[in-house]
Structures are given as C-alpha cells and as structure tokens.
Length: 135
Image 1 (tube, rainbow, N blue to C red):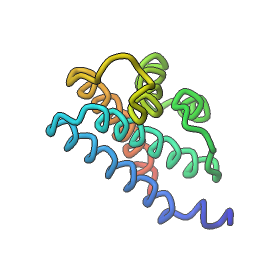
Image 2: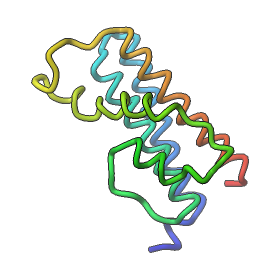
Image 3: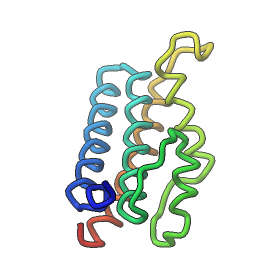
C-alpha cells in the first residue's frame, strides 16, 4: 500500500482531480452557480494539498481542514500558500456551500471569485513544487 501511495502516478491522479475541481469551480462561477463554485474551489485546494502530502510524506491525511493540511507541509519553505486566514475562509465552504441551511445568506459572485482565486493559488503552488521536484 505504501508503495502505491508513493508512486508518481498516484500523486498525479490526485493533482488531476484537484485541477478538475478547479475547472468545475471556474465553470460554475461563469454560470452564476456561486455555491458550487465555492465548493469545488475548496475541493481543489484540499486535493492539491493532499497530493503534496502524499508526495512528500507518503500518506493521505483524512481531514477536510485546509489549515490542518497546510500545517502538515509547513516545513516546505518554498511552497507558497495563501494565508491561514484565507485557507480558513475557504475551508468553511466545504459544508456551507453544500447545505441550504448552513448559512443565512446566498452566495455572491464576489465570494465565488475569491474562492476560485484562493483555490488556484493552492493548486498552482503545489504543482510548482511537485513538477519542479520531478514527478
């Protein structure tokens, strides 16, 4: 099992799924589906961070908290991630965007755009680290 987790193909599959979620977030934003956009942006960031953890440490964490995932790789000095505050804001959309009673207001285009931007910064930062490292 550990060998599979460490293979470059396994890491690439995680990154591809992160990229797919980022594209879904962008399409949802264009279609004014703001809650879906925020959800997929959060998923993109989560999957990218998990890909990086698998790449560096050989295991998959079982959390959806972006701040915890970022803490796992805080020793990677060259990995440039959004701030903890931005990650905390994005991780809230894992639940809020999925359930109509999880928040009092509707999602806005500005929120969705910010979510996509934060998600993109995570995915792009992880891709630079992994592909620059020879995967």
